[in-house]
Image (cartoon, rainbow, N blue to C red; front, top):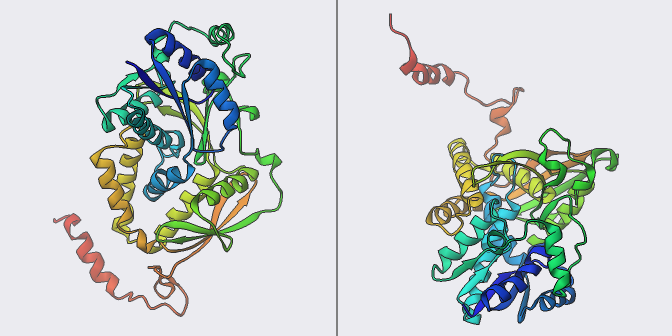
Length: 392
């Protein structure tokens, strides 16, 4: 191999990987950094990559593409792995894989590389993404190959070769962050009996540090897409970022679960996803107003399957694409407003309305305005229960 395109985060692992790949395979290393959340200092990132031996550095802000092409369909699918995890990291990996393949084609590189560990889910998501888009590319995973057994050894390696890194000691947590959420693991979190300490959280406050007065917000949707917050029109990325700030201030969107990893082990994970929590609940409540019973109930089955596909790294598959078409097929009905209340770590829907609403107060009411034909109930019950009558 002559050229390798490396998915580069700027951290200790990928910084060491630049030099390790160059020395081990005598290859030119091109770094690619994708930002799906806050964009770090481009100058510092470039300096780090160059100090490690990178010949070229691509730094791209992909938040808009991430929100439109990955977050939006996940929102429409109500995607939550094992009922809790909003798949923030899992949704970001196929986009990174896509750009790795594109940059490799542009640079005429025959190999791509990543800094994922050998026991996690992300190696699967990145590598399956690459192979689905270009199976001819060779894939390197330095963390599965090199002899380093500790972070301290990597720090010594970086110092020896003049690689600029900020790490000086082992961080207690492993953290991945984008606009759809924060994934936190390792350290004391590896004990499922231990309560997560407050220093593990990055964007949400504990309930006792949230404002005492409740905060009301209204989100407007047009054809399934959130388009305004409290009457102010906003595109998807700034709306998500604003909801992360609001929800985080009120402690919304914390999750603590023992999940089943794709590789077969269980792991204890802590997640923060204020915007994802708010938007999913709002979208679900609006759908409950505008969709019929059979569609709503069947969607829940497909939502679980969709979440598994994303978690398992099967983004670039015919089934995921087909499910996207299903969830998109009725979004034109999902237009309206949802009113929500944030208070002391809790989130509640307190109102919903839509011009496409199937709710009829005249049929639902128990007041004198009731227009429901009660006399029809007897015949309905007889036919409905007919298959289950016991014959004597």
